[in-house]
Structures are given as C-alpha cells and as structure tokens.
Length: 225
Ligand SMILES: [Zn+2]
Ligand SMILES: [Zn+2]
Image 1 (spheres, helix red, strand yellow):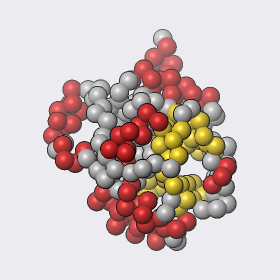
Image 2 (image 1 turned 90 degrees about the horizontal axis):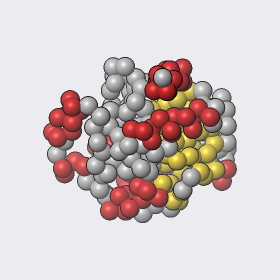
Image 3 (image 1 turned 135 degrees about the vertical axis):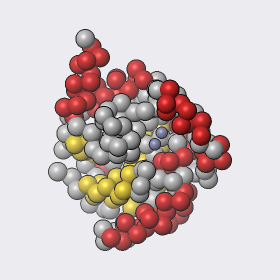
Image 4 (image 1 turned 45 degrees about the vertical axis):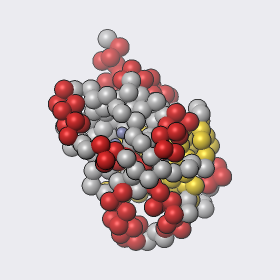
C-alpha cells in the first residue's frame, strides 16, 4: 500500500501520500493550524520542501484557511477543481447547506470573518480527473461533488483514498457516514458510487476517523431499497 500519513490538526486532518519525488497533500487546514502543521511534519521527519502538491478538497475555510502560508512555506503547487477555483481566488467559502436542524443552528454561530481566508491563485485546475504521475505518485484526483460542487478525492492505484468531506468520521459524526453539510446530498451518493467503482479500500476523511468501505456500501444499499 502507498505510504500514507495523517496529520491530525484538531478539527481538520491533513493527509499525505508519499511518492518518488516527495509528498502530495490533501488540504491545508485553518490559518491558525500552520504552526501545528509544521510541528507534525518535523515529527514525521518531513521537510516542508518535500511537499510538492497541495490538493484542495474544496474551498471551505477549514480546508484552505492556511493554504496561502503553506504554499509559501512549501513552494508546492496547488490543485483545485474548476467549480471551486473562483472561491479560492477570491478567498471566500462556498455556503454549504446543513443536512440537519442542529447543524444548521451550529453553523449560524460561525462568525462571517472566520469564513474568509487569504486568496490563492491555483496552479492546476481540473475537470473530471487528473493523473498525479508528474508528482511521482501512482494516484489520481477525481471529481466527487456533493459537499461542494467542486469537491475532489485522491485515489491511489492500490486503493488508498483521501475523500475530504465526501464523508465525515467519528466524532464529527457519532455514526460515521454522510457529511453533515452538503450542497447536494444526492451528488454525494453518486460520488460514493464512483469511489467504490475505483476500488477504494482505505478511506481517509478530513474530519474524524477513517470511514469503512463496508459502511459506505451499506448506506448506498439502504438508499436503493
Ligand atoms: Zn466543507
Ligand atoms: Zn470541513
């Protein structure tokens, strides 16, 4: 299996995949997470210059808040889907729709200023699929919309997947599965189907513990019936 490292920043996890030329990374966390990020890199004996690519799972402040600083520190390229690219360029978060009333209330409590972040000009803008060959990683990034319309996932040749907010794990969701907020919940089901078709085996998410593939299959089956 491809070498995977999870950096637990608190609310948001950052995922790293090791390749021949360095690491590709999913997400950048909050702006205030940068120091912790650097500390965790050091703990894993990784020099910031070894990070060659930062993939934007989607343009929400808890995923891209620290991106501008991390891009400067690492000199990594930034990849984003075309549907979220404009948000990234402007430094604004897509307004997501909470799928439950409680989350809706919690969402209202987040101050507007926190949802803003330093804009970043992306280096790579993708549509449906993008191979990471040039980064020495046997993996690709695929479009998996639903949480936002431009949410993407990384899938390695041997089945390691970083799906960001296509699902949420424990304890963000006591019962791991569907994300707590989504632009289009039906798109999430289609994206899960695509991920399973790609043969994912280990699924890592941006919030909470890894989500089991068996659980994803069960939720899809229940939806069908
Ligand atoms: Zn989000
Ligand atoms: Zn998030």
